[in-house]
Image (cartoon, rainbow, N blue to C red):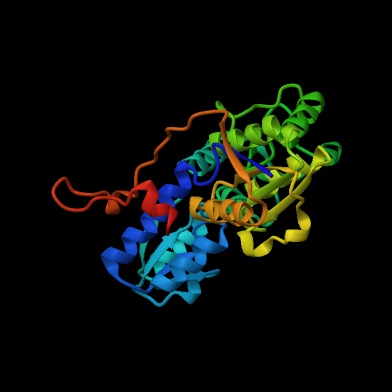
Amino acid sequence: MKIILAAPRGFCAGVNMAVDSLDLTLQKFGPPVYVYHEIVHNQFVVNSFVEKGAVFVDSVDEVPPGSVLMFSAHGVSPEIRQAARERNLTALDATCPLVTKVHLEAIKFAKAGYTIVLIGHEGHDEVIGTMGEAPEAIILLEDADGVDQLQVSDEAKLAYLTQTTLSVDDANRIIQRLKQRFPNIESPPKEDICYATQNRQEAVRMLSDQADVVVVLGSQNSSNSQRLRELASDKKIQAHLVDGPQDLSVDSFHADQTVLITAGASAPESVVQETVDWLVKRFDATIESREIREENVKFPLPKPLRPSKQTMKAPSDASADKA
């Protein structure tokens, strides 16, 4: 067996920032620290933080007044922020800056009187938060077929935004349909799909043709991880989306296969290495690393958690991978 290890893979800058933020918050305030929704969509990360004293909630009402609450990397609506203030919570914001960018674009377009078409998946945490910024102005669009059903009051004041973790190909198909029907539709100043989502998709697109099987490390509720699996499946390549090697079966592989391994933006490198070791042990696999693009993006911690020059030092990426 041959393993092709795709790069870039795994933690993006937004996830590293969110994971480091929760680690530092637990150190600074001590448990319990409450988190509104999963800090990132990865079961390994979530379970490890539960063991450290994080409590993940789906409603601010579940958080005792006066407690510490962290907003997840996917962002929240103004309604949630207000609810946190009313409960006198110490709120720390680990929203990915690229998600915040989409929120600000929604606010800007809405204030200018635009109808906003948000391309995304209904029920996703990021979509809920973005729509909460201007619910009266936003229409959710999930696929290209929905373009023909759109009803807008003023086609001259129409704009689109996208969820950051979409399939680039799917989003482009929808955007093209929108532009065909509404030639004057406004776009965001810079595309919304994040650099990490695009890079991981590009790696699978370029490398999967050389593989018999693709293994994507990531959780089922991770949108960007699902898109990686779909990219391989669309090419008629056997693809697995798993949290770790415990979800794999020896019967799914043959000793003479080439296996491409990648990881969604919220999957830690430790589970990638465990999966590689699992295949090496059972199939005597050799490993070839293939980097199609270098990533050097870093996002700052929330201001209350930024280290002073003399004291606190943020965890390294390596320690975050173990989080």
